[in-house]
Image (tube, rainbow, N blue to C red; front, side, top):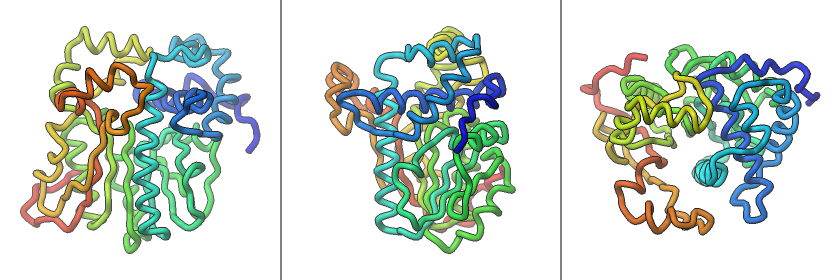
Length: 303
C-alpha cells in the first residue's frame, strides 16, 4: 500500500477516536523490546508512516507518541491484553477455521495480519472518521470487510447477517468502557438475539473503579496522563466476570483473564502487590462469553 503520510489529517480524530493511536504505538514499541511479549510488524510499519504525519502536529499526545514517552508499563500491558485477545481468537479459529471474526471498535487493530488463517471471514467496525483513517493503511477484500458505523447503530448487523450460519466471534478490545452502561447491555443482548450461539471476548473494567473515575480530579489526572480530551473518559464497568450472565438466560461465562495470570516478570512489583488481591486483579480484565439462545422474558435490547 502506498505511503499514506502525505494525505493524513492528524487533526481529524479527537476524543475517544483519538485513543486508537495509543494501542497502535504501544504494540510498535513493544515489538522492539528485547524481551517482547508480542511482535507486530504491521504496527511498526503503520507507525513509521504516522510519525512523518504527526511531526507537523502540536497536540501533546502526538508529541508524546513521537518521542515514545508513554507511561511506563503501558506498552507492556497493552501488548499483554492484545496477546490475550490473539490467544482467544486463535482458539476460536482452531475450532472454527471457516468462522467469522468481528472486531467492534477496531481502531487501527492489526489482528488480521498476525493470526489470519487464510479461510476465516473478518469484519472491522468503527466510526466513519476512524474507518477513513483505517483505509489509509489497510486493504479491504473479499474476506476482510470494513464497516463504518457506531456499535450503537442497528444497520451494521445486516452486513454481518450473511455469516449468521457460521460460528461467530465478536471482539471488543478497548471499547465497552467508553459506552454508557445501557449501551453495553443493549449491545450484548442485541448480539445474543441476532447471533445466538456467538462468542464475545471483551475487555471490562470494575464498576467500582469507574465510579471512582467520575471524580473530576481523577478524570483530569487520566486525561493529562494520556493527553486526551474530556470525552475520552470511562463510563461503564461491571461488578464481576459473571455480570453478563445475570442479564439473560443463555449467556454463559467461558473464561476470564487478568493481566497477572501470565505471570509476566516484566510487570515486576505489580504481580506481587496488585496481583495478590481479587479487588485489584480485576480492576481491568478480559471476559469470554458464549451468547446462547436467550429467554424471551429478557428486557429488549434497544440500540
